Amino acid sequence: MYISGITMKLDNVVFINNRNVRLHSNNIMVLYYKMAKSKVVDYESWIPWIIFFLVLLVAFPYNKIREYFTPEPERIIEYVQVPQYIYVPQPSQEPQEPPVVVDIKPVEELVCVFDIDNTITAGIPERCIKMCTDMGARLSINTTRNVSTPHDLDLERLGFVSPNFDETDYYFNPNAATSNFEDAAGVKVEHLETVMNKYNITDSKRVILFDDNKINVDFAEKGGFSAVHVGTKSPGIQEDDIKKAYEIIKSLS
Image (cartoon, rainbow, N blue to C red; front, side, top):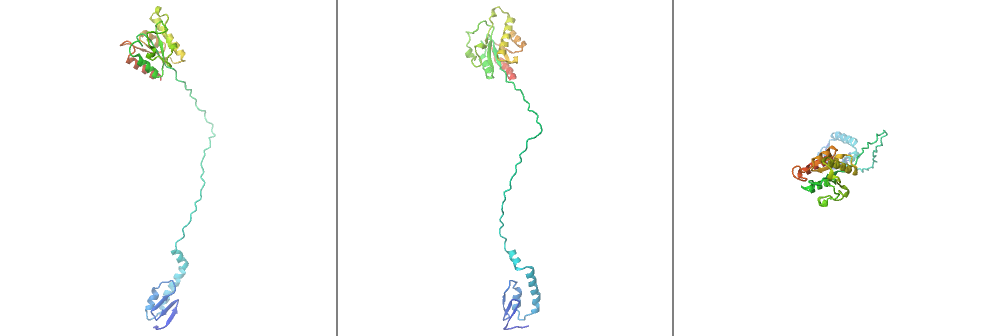
């Protein structure tokens, strides 16, 4: 059908001079543009397109299309503080064994006992005396001399000073002039026992005798005391004697 110089309105479509087309809906303009260019308007060919647009409007209404293309507002997340529970273990109700009490005995005193003649009168006695005091030992003198004070010796210079030594730690034999070697050795052992009782020592090995006389050393060892036989190579205390005494003290620590 040919239309010229007239205006027809169909489904919100306005044809002006068969060429000018205005679209008053939000639908696609391709079809209307094609139909506007045609001089012959075939209304029957419009029917499928009209049906298509109606179905499109029903299936996809304007609100849904708007929601689809409109971004969702940001969601506000509220953080709720959740209380934390701390597990506190309950004391066991089972009967517990009493703790084992270990009776720790205090360390007993250690005493180095020195003869005078050919023991601390020669060699290097100062080094041996210092070694004893450095290892925590007390000092004592046990001599066969019959005098209570050795005027020929400077005991302080040798190292016999407080608190490791005092005048009560000096033992002598007033009957030395009439005693034989065995009797003199027996007196020395008695003095060792006196030292042991003075410091409440239960282990006699912790009393160490330094003597140049082999008889005195043997009697001391038979009595259960420790002993170092000095001057076997040279008079007085020598380096080997100090090493032997050190090993004895170390074994008693």
